[in-house]
Image 1 (tube, rainbow, N blue to C red):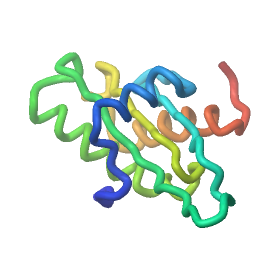
Image 2: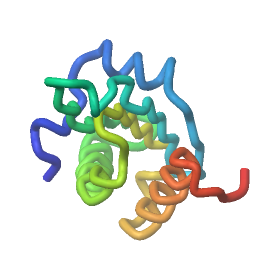
Image 3: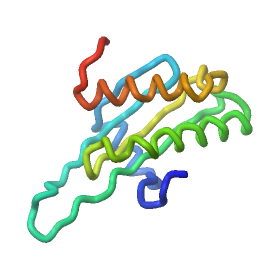
Length: 124
């Protein structure tokens, strides 16, 4: 489970990540990343935690399928939070094929999207 301090909850935070962040699309999902805007080395300030949120629409499937996809994505992002810059906002939007995908396929697409956003290379 993704700890509470790493969850994106406010609508404004989702909007900031989607509108002002970078985007990487894959066949099963789209990842929006807004890197931390604060200076972690500023005196007296600690870096805010990286927070992640998920968007899974009805196009993915019924309520059971949507919740299953959200649980899988939360589990996957939990292990990847330390790789992201402190203070980052991440929004993962599941596409319709995500409901039929297994855990490994979602992990592959999430890793590829994050690698592209973090400057790890890759193809477009």
